[in-house]
Image (cartoon, rainbow, N blue to C red; front, side, top):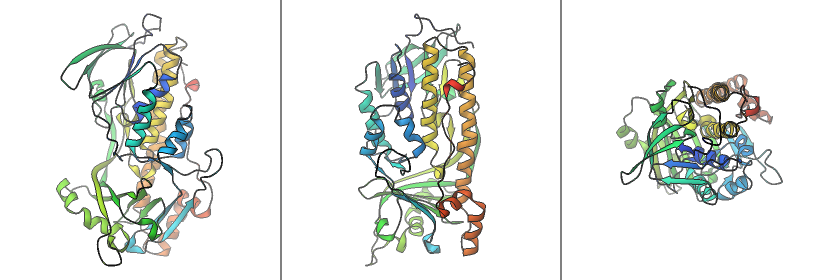
Length: 422
């Protein structure tokens, strides 16, 4: 379906964003600061949970993206904290030996050389919602869902059907509909778009707990390398909450997972999770099992309907690129939509297709491959020093960290002006 050339009669249709998570809200902020007449409507079925920690670490490559919105990055840092260091280490059953590490000096001006931003998802959403509440032309409807849509035959609009918490329904003609509605995206299903890829061989279990890791010499981020007892141990906040993620066989039921939480945690925690008196020293706050996947939508565009974030692609957490890639989707999409809606695009159809192709290629090259490598890395055999030396020899990231060399990840960004059709 061809996109109709924008004119004053259709450019003022709203842009509807399905999904009020971090990616959808960030996209709304980016669009709101564009010089466009379009109203921005964010539709989110859930009410925000201020205690949510699902996504809690944000990579430095996202800092320049946040900084596009004046004052946002300092506000996010003030709401959370910056990581002071990371390491790869053996499991506690294998001595908890540090294989390679890096510390961050988070003082001084600018963000170069800073650690990850540690900010739980609920706090991130709170900051974004607070900013959107102060912006004219933006509406966030909580408790509302996108149910379906119909593309206009002339390519000038998309009719979006939404429903509210009391069963009320509404149909809104929109300039664009953006699906930022997560892994189980309703928008993607209505588009008829598949997520191609695979489910990895193990389930991952993310637990939030309280335990004095710092007193045991742990860094803010610890990648635990072990054939069986691999995982991630990371600080969530400054109030003693930590994330401990570990793997279990893919055949485990949810009942199996919940029944064995304490048993599995004891393999990850120093002293089997006990204090000097032999009492349990850990308190589990949250348990969230999920199947790790490496998948990408066959396309992120169909007419005036687009996909971003987890609605468009899924990855395991060990490279920390899941939310980061969604933020980069939003960063790339906002100027493209603004360019089209201002009537400046040389070829709107080609530009949108180019954006979709570019984002999918970024996922393949910059997200999928490193994430698969990161997953394989933590499952490496490091029982002996010879095993550790072999890991250092074959893995450039661990080797660079060990030698003190800077680790420069490839850029997640897509520059709109460089896309065909701009």
